[in-house]
Image (tube, rainbow, N blue to C red; front, side, top):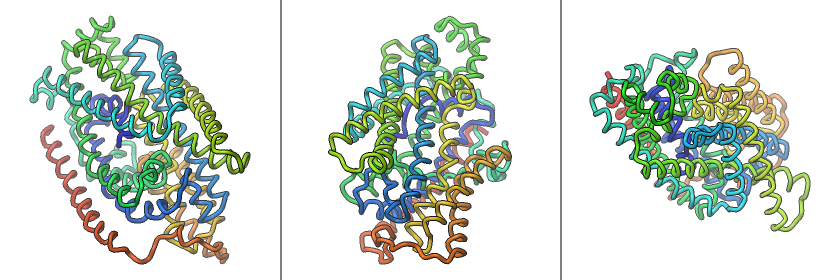
Length: 497
């Protein structure tokens, strides 16, 4: 949870709520799929993966299918996570350039270099512990910013300053088949359901943390904290977006920001239109006391590093294990592999910095808000990757050639939807999974070939253990919690009516 609560959450989600056309508190719908999505992760995926001592979770796919499947899915993960980490570097550059009044390109390079060195020197245990401490700091920062903004405008003004459309959360009429309905209830819930199964169950940056826990029960407990804890956290920084947005809609606010930053009010509006992610940094610099400004910017940069280090750490581990150790140097000492993994950390860091610079020059990332871009990148690939793991765990009939072609087919379909339709990117998680799964099943049965001898440890156990029966009650509670957060969202929406 600490990895997910980063600078992007602090900066970009509030900008989406307050400034993005078609945005608003509907971002809360994105959390509806979390408690439901974590149920199959805890019940099906984690019990299988935790039996093995995997460094790269894509080793499972070689045990279940073959080396081609492992290499294919590992490559997809590295592509998606590499691009997503580059977006996080871009966010850090926007924040730092606003705080220090330097060029964004300079800030991106500076952030990248610091993070590369920071991550290369650390290990997974230090990274996880530092992430947790950084989460505590940024939660305090959210409360300070939200409280300060609310004190400036008052409760009533906070709920009337933004356009009423920004308070529309539950939209049951939209199915996400056009640009206007991409944040409707159904694509958010159904697409989010598949997205979170894949994110928590098949993404190296998350699962490597889950597998570092000593036993399966404690892994489930950690995921249970995510299931119950994410919505309150997301709600807190979304409400901060409402309050900060209300401040910026006041005439006096633009004058104060202009005086503090040496900008014309009209130039401020143009800047926010082009780069909405600068909203929170501008507010912090203009309305908070100097000591608090320093604390919050340190918190933001620390949170940024907590997100970046997990991305680089997982990328270097997967590249070393799935490529270098498998194809280049199959037998070497642990110290050798450690040095190589650090070199891969530097290599991936350079890739992310260069890609972040390209994103900035193209401008699309900043116009769309980075929190949208970073999730859209993942949704292109999450469905087909989930199909590979779930088909492997649940069915003995699926063959390696069939699942490989199924994955490719799912990606091609999602690419077509991206280029030629307006279907919400959230649906890509569903369509990619369905296409890959159906194609794999069809090819497996049509081909008539039997899969190789499958190790029983790669399959779900048919007998439900007594401990798992106890968890069934918790899964039912998660279903009730899903209904509860929808009801809470309805109450919040009624405040803006």
